[in-house]
Every structure is written in C-alpha cells, then in structure tokens.
Image 1: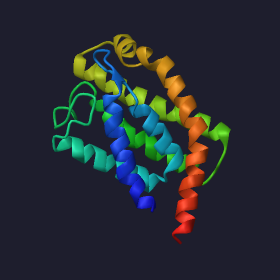
Image 2: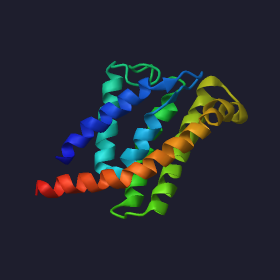
Image 3: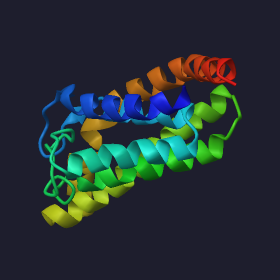
Length: 173
C-alpha cells in the first residue's frame, strides 16, 4: 500500500504547481506544502523515488513545474527550486527517521524551506545575473508569510498522515 504514496505525492507536487499566485520570476505555489508533508510523512527512499518520478515526468515535457515542463524548465530561473526539492525532502526524512515529535517536525519544515530557498535563490541569482540581495528579494521575501502558513499546515496534518500510513502498512503485513 505504501507504494501508492509515490505516485500520489508526485501528482500532488504537479498539482501544487498549478495552485499559485503568479509573482515573477518565481510564482507562489503549494509545492512547498506538499514537499514538507512528504518530508514528514514518507521515508527517505519514498521521497527520493517520488521526486525522481516527478522530475522525470517534467523532463519529458509534462507541464508539471511552475515554469511548465521539459528540459528548459530544469535549467530556467526556477530550476534551483526544482532540484533542491528532492534534496530537502530526503535530508529531512533521514533526520526524522521514525521519530514522532512536534518540535522535530517544526525544525524539519524550516530546514526543508531553507534548503529550497538557498538552492533556488542561488541558482536564480546565477541564471538571472542578480546580486545576492536582488535574488533574495525575488526568490525568498515574497514567499515568507505563505511558507510559514504552509509549514504550520504541514506540521499540523503530518502526524495524522504518518499514523494512517503506518496503519495501512500494518494492515498489509
């Protein structure tokens, strides 16, 4: 049953790109909410496979990234955010392991967002020839309030999701 979580979360990442507020050069989306939930719910292997599936589907042209699909999306201004999503989800789930702590969940969603901000903003600065401050102004500041809300949502619902995933896994053993 856990294997169904991989296509489910890959689909949520894709749908999250379409639930957005268009703010150039990087729109505000629900993708980071789903990344945080994944990181707190799935194990590191499931997170890695989910992200590989999501990136592969986008690479072959499905318009599942905020900038569409295809190789151009994987090298355009938002590419740094795309490539740091698997890194953040895998690192957070490795740290979390099987621990179930609200404080740890809070620290991990902050870590997930920091990794995405750092990688995405650095690539944005390089690809757009922006200063560090201009890149932060474009790639971090517009997202802070929304990301705090998304982090809170992830921390609130993830413990329940973990219980359900564990229950489903136990029922199939």
